[in-house]
Length: 278
Image 1 (tube, rainbow, N blue to C red):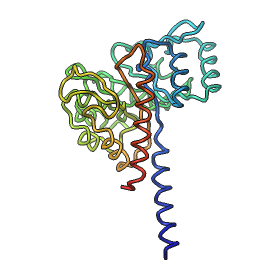
Image 2 (tube, helix red, strand yellow; image 1 turned 90 degrees about the vertical axis):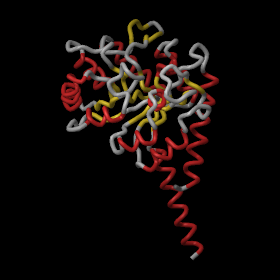
Image 3 (cartoon, helix red, strand yellow; image 1 turned 120 degrees about the vertical axis):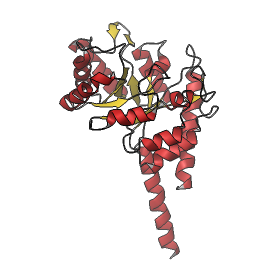
């Protein structure tokens, strides 16, 4: 009997570890927007993070001109793919693509670029009238669209109800919320996550200093109002399998020590989550 109990708890523990192993810890490279994409890769590598979400305005760096976007020619794209393979780092998402980046003439080019680069997601804030086109292109290129949110009132998706409405009937569109912006917008994070259950494909993982204040600053993980352990617990309850994209917009000129602390906080919270078996 004792042996059976031990086996049961071993299997349960293994299940919990496996569940969190399905979460891909990433860095949104806006965290390093003072630096180039190539420098961001090096920083992520030094932190032991193997996944990136790259914003399309980031300079490539090195001797390569241009930004990480569809404007790169095939030679530059291939060199970046080779470099990423060498570093064993994968770009999981391109974004956030919003009205400042896309228009009717170039939107498809973003999808073509993501497909060429092997990027499975585009994080975006489409205009309402463009949602069907985003959904169509996502199906055509097999690159899913995940809706992001920024602070109100400029973001269409600042409230989760808007995201739910936008996803309805559009199978290729899911959610990639920013929990820090939800807090800034006065949105209850856990309640919002429940509204999006089953459609959260990734999220921006951060902490902020104050609730319901669009101007509040980012703080070290665990030092703010976002209750990050509760966020992780809710993801686990939802059987989440997606991308946890760390973003940190403080101390932007010299934030590596802070990012080390942020990653350690995440890892510690995951270990505690696994040990509770809840």
